Image 1 (tube, rainbow, N blue to C red):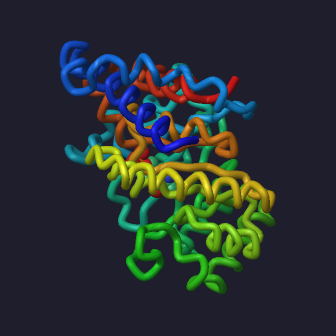
Image 2 (image 1 turned 60 degrees about the horizontal axis):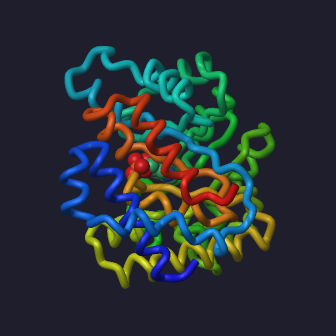
Length: 295
Ligand code: PXP
């Protein structure tokens, strides 16, 4: 995708996002007409790709619940609503400090869901034991401590190889599909392949920050990193997912990358739900993803 088209897509999606949450007049003011009108016209740049799955991360429903203790709002109820509105899977991160999702949420999600559960977890013995007990469809290994991260935030799979390999093996042997949440760099794709993980989730945080700041050059640069990593990872046989920080305003250009099979999105959906309701927020995100995805 050319840089100009990427920027147009970000602009168009931002206008739609603002229109959905703050009204159409505000959207026109911030992103004048023309950007969105042109955004869908680049059909000659499209290529056939498989359906892009949307994994809805419900962590921040638990954040709201935990602000007051008790059981309300219930993340499982939110998950079921998200599925009804079009989510293809549900993601939940049981953090070591249990700051949002609790152990009982994971068990209840596993019991109640009819779609795949993606269990986000640190690569620790405690979390591996919980995953083996719960048997989610997938486990996404994420860094929780500074020393487990690369400089930009993904899992340090080059420095942390040995530590990860045994955990990946234990999960895979239990039939859990393992993904690694990593920086979008070709060398990291090579390392993921060497570790034997079937899936990588590309960290979109730097791209999303640049898009939020409307820094066009940096947005294009970060998007190009994601595209290169997706192409390289897919050529190695890795299944490519992406996520972190995606909003209605930034999802389009990432959804347009044909190698990406799944997006995991949480915070912006739960935030948008305050204004439009969760079901509508999920439908809006689904529509924003489908708008730029090749048929
Ligand atoms: N993917 C991974 C691996 C994550 O850790 C998170 C955040 O928990 C997300 C996706 C979703 O990010 P956000 O809540 O910013 O959409």
